[in-house]
Image (cartoon, rainbow, N blue to C red; front, side, top):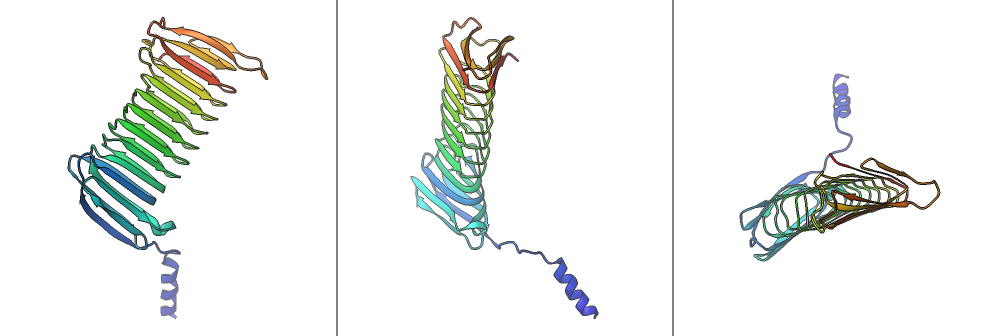
Length: 287
């Protein structure tokens, strides 16, 4: 009787589902400082770290039934983790030459990139994408996850569907688009910038350089501008409701939004900030 009780207790304490077994990954390949690295991870997480060594090091774990591939030459390397569902789970860290050109894709994987300065192109279908570094060219996209960039690329394109976009930095040519995700910019696009949403709100905290142009378009999102007191620009706002440095405009419900033009700081620099929203409100203020 006592033995039967111990057997029942052991069964009650056992996990309902067993975790998939894992296999360790530790691979190293040579890659030129400005070479190309392409990597795909179906699910899980991958972190890419830029370093000052002409080689690639991939470490971490993957589920036992998934497949890991990596290979190539000094000028280019490709790698992937393949499988289905939990069989493709990965938790990997990849060290890459800092100035290499980087291409990363995640199916359901979270992607994090730190310390890269070469051209960067990364995306995830439903995972988050987080980038920090001094890459001169950044293209990043995620459908359902959040997208966070800390850096000041000359060329930048960020895109989500429902995930939020958060950018800290400046840039020469920047574009951000999302369907319903919230967009927050700290620092500001100094030359040419465009932000587009359908229902997502936009908060822009930053200035605009001499002769620059910033356009913000949304159908139903609210737009908040926090512009430095040193800003010199022509502010053109089309919205149903606006409050521009204390100048308020409230349109009639059911009618088309009205346009308001406001000179900020004298506008001698020739810069232009254009904001359009069909259903949302627009505010502009200085910190």
